[in-house]
Image 1 (cartoon, rainbow, N blue to C red):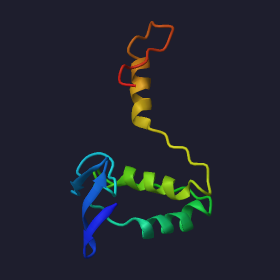
Image 2: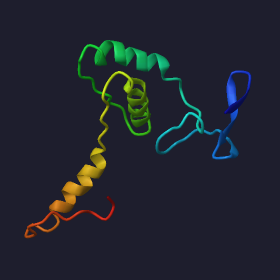
Image 3: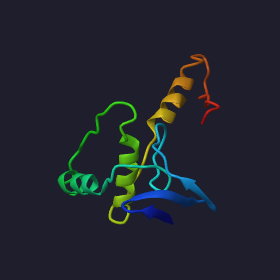
Image 4: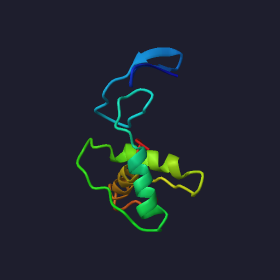
Length: 114
């Protein structure tokens, strides 16, 4: 539940505690905790122009531009109509890198970070 003054929510109720919303500069943005640009129009545009047509698309931006947040919001938006599968290639890269640590090993070695 959000309390607001005018258009902009100031307090979020999360986990039984009222918290001030803030501008997140790292990790996934959560609307109940962080100030965010509204994604509704962008999600509708991506869905109409690419997803519903079966087209591929690329999101190409620098660090901290909201790429992961946008993709997670898109997955949430599509889950009632499509089967959504999300992969984290960063963790897969850690695993692949750990396979090459010991070239003489017969069994793959899992990284402790997984």
